[in-house]
Length: 132
Image (cartoon, rainbow, N blue to C red; front, side, top):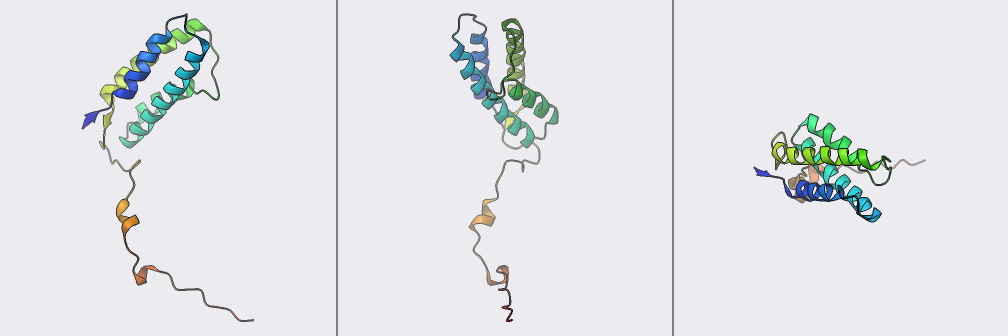
């Protein structure tokens, strides 16, 4: 089972760079999109691995960085949230693995049923025509 680390690393590096107060406003908009996407992806990984506590933590993190319904806070508070988010991202590298750890059925698709040829007993009979 491989460890998922690239999304968290990208988000963590961007969050670390966000602590620089001289960044343009556009950087923080991009940061919201990236962090929301990364943590939403990690929510699905946590659901697939049946790690409910991580689903809650990562879901709340994705909501905080939601670029559509924004959370407006001052710079000092955002700096604290960014540091906490970096910690969450790094810890999730060790908590979430790529692949199936639990049942693994949350995000999988059964391709055998799609490729199966239809048999005559699988096809329902036509409705009887009612004459009036």
